Structure formats: C-alpha cells, structure tokens
Image (tube, rainbow, N blue to C red; front, side, top):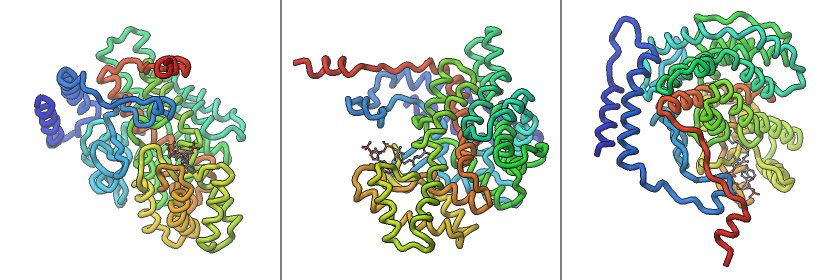
Length: 456
Ligand code: CMX
C-alpha cells in the first residue's frame, strides 16, 4: 500500500508541465526526483526488505549466474518475450514519443538519456539544451589526443577506446571531490558531472580513433549547433542525413539492456568500489569488447562475408542452411543469434529491420541477412543447444552501416560503446543517488559445495 502511494507521488511529479521560459535542466529535475526516489526505496525496503526474490541452484552458480535475481537497475527492464523497455517504454514508443531533430524521424539519444535518468519524456527544448550542454563539455585534453595518436593502427579500436577512457580519468570531478572528503549524500552530484562530461567527450575520442586507424588522422572541429549524433557523424566524416538518422537510432537502441549484461554489470560493479565513472565505464568497455557480447557486431559481418564467399551471389536457402551447419559443426557460435535473457526476436533487431525496409530495401546484404533470418532459427532449433534461436541486436547493425559506406567492421563495437555509455552512466548516477554499497556476492569452491551437499 505504502509502495502504491509512493508510485503515485512519483507519477504526479512525472506529469508536471514545464512552462517556464528557460527549460528546466536535467540536473535541476534530477535534484527534485532523487529525494522522492530515495524515500520510495527506503519505505519499500522497510516493508518488503525480507521478501525472497528467488532461489539459487548449484547449476545457476556454475552457469554464469543466469536467472539469479540479485541486482537493482532502475533505468530499463528486459522481458524474455517482449524485449527491452527503457523506463517502461518500448522501442517503438520511444521512437514515437522522444524528441527528434528538425526534419528527422528517429529519436535523439539525448532524449533517451533524459528518459533513462529521470523516467520522464523530455520536451524538445530540454533536449536541445542537453545537446548544447554536451557540446560545451566535448573537448578532450591534449594528452588523450597524443595517447591515441601514438597507438599503432594494429591495436584494436576497442582497446584504444578503453585506453582513452581510462586516460580521461584525470578529468574526474568525483575522484577529486572524494579526495577532498565530499560526504556520501553528494556523491551523485559529482558522478552526474563526470557522466555528462564522459558522454560529451566520447564522440571526439571515438572519431579520433576512426580517423587515425582508417583515414588521415585529421578531424574537423565539433559543431556545437548540431545534435550529438549528427556532430558525431561529421567527426567521423559523414555528411549524410540518412546516416545522421541511423546514428540517432543506433545510439538510442544500444544504450541500455537492464543491469546483468557484461558491460552494464561490469560498470556497475566497478562503480560500486567508488571508482569514478571513467574507470567504471572503461572496465565496462573491456567487457563489451568480448565476442559473445558487443564484439558480436564485428563477428556478424565477418561471418556474413565468409558466407558470401562460400555460397556465392543469390544463394539458395539450402546453401545457407549448409553454411549454418558448417559453422555449428566446426564448434563455433552463429554470431548475432541467441541471447541470455531474450527468447524471441530482439526488438532492437526488429527496429533496425524496419529502418532497412524503409531506407535500403533493395540492398543485397540486407536481403542476405533477411534470408538468414528465415533459415537460422530453424537450424539452431534443430541443433538443439541454444535456448534462443532468434537474432539479437548485432545480427543487423552492421548491414545498415555498410549501406552508408561505413565498411570497417572492426570499429563497430566502438559505436556500440558510445551508445552503451548512456545506459550505464544513468545506472551509475542512480547507484550513487540511492547509496548502493560495494558489491560482494558470496562464492564457494566446488569442494565446499561437495562437502555441503554430497558429504553423506
Ligand atoms: N550459435 C551456436 N550455439 C549457440 C548459440 C549460437 N548463436 N547461442 C547459444 N549457443 C550454445 C551455447 O554456446 C551453449 O553451448 P554449450 O552448452 O556447448 O556451452 C548452449 O547453446 C546454451 O547456450 P544458451 O543458454 O542458449 O546461451 P547463453 O545464455 O549461454 O549465451 C549468448 C548467450 C548471447 C552468449 C549466446 O547465445 C551466443 O554465444 N550467441 C552468439 C554471440 C552473440 O551474438 N552475442 C551477442 C549477444 C548480444 C550482445 O550482448 O551484444
């Protein structure tokens, strides 16, 4: 009952109208919401803190903690069948409700960040102000530029990305404030500043890596009049309204996927030691760089190209089926398929497919990916191992990028990383606002468990 009452008080806050001349800033709004949420959590825990969330079996402990309910993540929840909801909004609802660029149809990731942080859909004015705020924070220190310029082109873009984010740590307001003895009640304020600085600086870092590795190393100046995605596109070297729209959609949908995935959980875990957001996010990036997680977007493209070489142009369904089986019989995974939580087609795949149907219906690679979509679930089901034979986000993203001439697939996970920052930093802000403690789950050795269960 108490809980319901608190939910309604938060909802009342959510429907406030914003009619002042200067739009309320994200931080001002957050300052109002945090005490309400702190009180809600306090009362909820007082009443329900001893309730059981679920049991832990021995297989769960050995099986990557799949299904163990042991994390709080405020910004999104993933349903096995429906897919992701960002603060209770599905992807199509976000596409409809979040503010757009002038003449654009896809949501602006700035608006998604506002939604993740506050639980509220921002106005266009609020989003424009956030774009301007990020533009003002976007410069990166020269030592980070030097560091990236010294990296060999052979160093994977994700390693360079993580390296640069760790190096940006020298900018952390939170680390400085902590050394100065800031009280716990103010942690969120400094973490908020770091998170916004970090997000703002990522396009300059990511584009520098791209330009160094694949182009002549020269970058244009940031354009503070453009939204985050369009400016990022220009830094990368793209001046194409279609690509701007793709970036807006891409950066929105890759942002958050509740708290248990490797990049989100790693960022959350490292942040719980009060490592600042730069250190926490660079750790998360190292997890995203794994082929079973974010690097799968690179792996998908490599796999598709190898398949193309093997099956030729306009392949029959039978040829694709045989190629899928050859991958599985070689003991490899089919990249872009399967998921630890989802049991249906990922709505992030579905919305990218919609984008392709609208903007590139005749693209040969899109047709091939669509053909694989009609065959792979059947083959994976027959193979009988994966619990989810349906495609995930990574099965589609590369095809869209290739259409716009963005052909360097070993860079694709960096784009995923720029987007993932929006979700995991929102999580960090709330973890500090709600005073979450250092994470420390209990572990056992096999011998201990044998003694516990099999001693007689
Ligand atoms: N191809 C072949 N085998 C697969 C498979 C796939 N796409 N997906 C799962 N399997 C296998 C697993 O390797 C596992 O085999 P073993 O029993 O031999 O270990 C078995 O099926 C059971 O796995 P699961 O419970 O269905 O899946 P998990 O929760 O363990 O793993 C995931 C999830 C995503 C790592 C897995 O489906 C996979 O490896 N997919 C391919 C890589 C990929 O696309 N990753 C990106 C995910 C999205 C993201 O994070 O970006």
